[in-house]
Length: 377
Image (tube, rainbow, N blue to C red; front, side, top):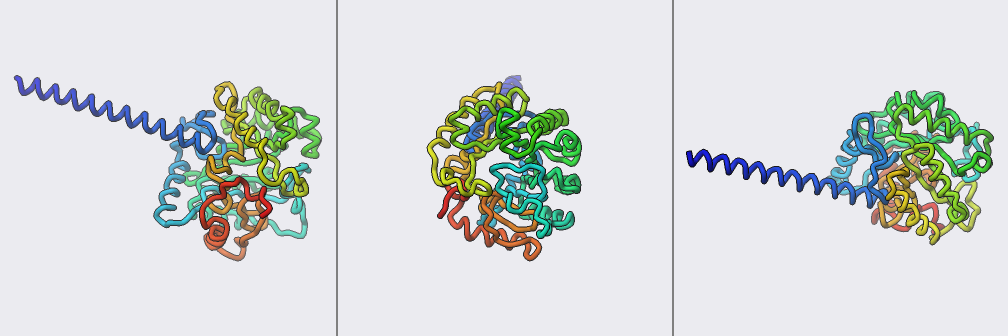
């Protein structure tokens, strides 16, 4: 009898110890995730849950615990095994056609250029396969205006969603009628470009009358089909100090978007002659600090500042270290702002081009001084 009592006590003690270990492991995992997203995004706010119950911290990365997130962790492991940098994000400029004429467009030199030959559907599919074989866990579809590509549905659908999370940047003109197809093809998120909080200013900046209203219609449609929906905006010092950023964030709150992604204006494309955009700028540091109040408030969407992500505080500039961009013509560049061409997938395999780009740009890792496009040297 005494032995039975002692055995029950030992069993109870072991169960309590196991429960304590499980609780400590749970708390550790929670802390690890929060610190990781704090470092990466500048916050650890869950902006939504997917239909499968996966928490989303940003529309630009796979939801936590999703298959694509698992692949991102495997890619990190193989970076260590191979002792080399591997890409985690690939941007595909699907088309050189666009219906807008944005004042800050970084791609304007090639818009609607009949002398150039965009990639075919088969060539796009082959690039996707090669990038996924390299370990890419996030694929970003952009343009031009990607929803103007006649086969965009086939492109999105061909991506293996077990390996890669897919999101899109769009000006929103065609999104209302395309959102359901975008979700059906397996995309997880969409960013809609909004550069001013009122229709007149936004449409002027983007050279297209009626675009603001169409963008808001697209946002509403994308939310209905359960996409993670963000606003993407381009802000300069005047816009930040004049309160336009705050008004855009307020607009996002009213529209119920999950995230606002902020790009500080880059000295590329139509802004290449703006000397005020070169080098370090203290107002950007002020902006990074300014948005923390929004990220601490659950009533607001998550706010992600690209300049923060490309600084030493987060991952640094990822161009050529974990990020690559393919133009509509197959040219491989570090990103869609840095247009130095390292090869063409019509002529070489992607892994060969990636290795060349990686060795030139990233012998010591990512650039801590922000986006390469903002530094003349």
